[in-house]
Image (cartoon, rainbow, N blue to C red; front, top):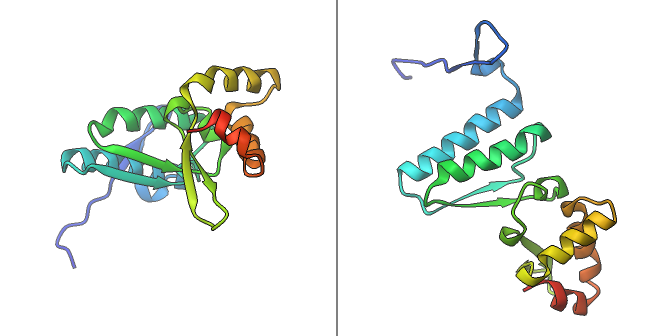
Length: 155
């Protein structure tokens, strides 16, 4: 048993007292964990960290800020985020998105959007009144059956 225990506390903007980390929401705990791992990776010269379904338990209005903070804290550490959420994609730079598409033998093949097609995809999503994430997810479903669509839009 350790000789010393620490109680991490947070002070929220509109709360006049500190709250023990044990009493904050699951999403807040996850954000603290993610940021701690990102800082530790940079301090310890870890070249790569990954987060599976980063958006789980995190309020959607916080996702964009979380992604920005992660990119600032990561420094030289590469960050890979996997997700099944079209919502998360809305906060990503289209040129940095890798889409996993299953091949006929069940292996994921990761593809990037061709730089020359990014503006077209954004225009198409807008004209369909769809978010980028929703448009890409729909496109991926069609692309699995349409090899020409894959060749046209993805590397």
